[in-house]
Length: 257
Image (cartoon, rainbow, N blue to C red; front, top):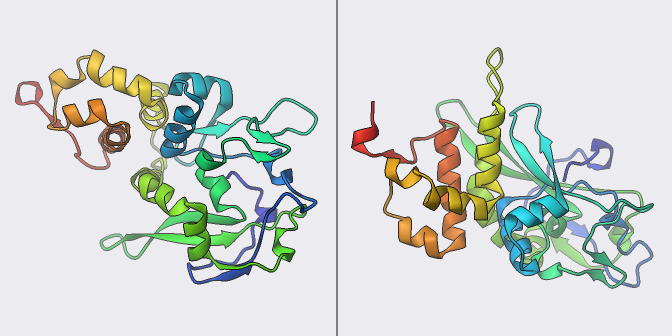
């Protein structure tokens, strides 16, 4: 989520950190966290939700999201669009709870825990490290419940461990920052990053209906044609290549300079 820092407890937590929390229909704050929320979406979120709704990624993005451009990286992100009403509700929330609960986004699964990724170590021997923190919004009464968790057991219970596995490579790409004094990403490159991250149906058309496969040599053609998750992960390779983070794609000999 794109959270106001006033709701983030400024203490770094680990998978073993304990907390008490429970959310249920009988708690007076039920569904309040599903209003006026800025929920940043991941590629796997889009795959799950658009499949659940039986619509294309393009239709999902147009109807349910808006674009946020990160100031430090120029990367475009899809953010879940709240309803234009007095309460600013999530479009999927009902009096009974979330209508797409089994396919809800990563950040919704984590709540009231927040998760981030940072680079630690030296420049030569850097590693990517997960970190966690608690979100304590004033309207949330879930912390007053008696059910005890560790962050690790919460992740497993909420199914977010699978989401993290699916999104990990993409999150690592998001650690990239614009170089000071150098131009930011132009709109064309931003559009390619957005497509490969979120608009998986259009990305598939780009691969198979453009000259992409005339130029790029890959043994994954049949796999990415048949398997949407494989296509999503191929998109991560494409992102690394476009951002010049890693030579993940191979240009055919006749097109090399």
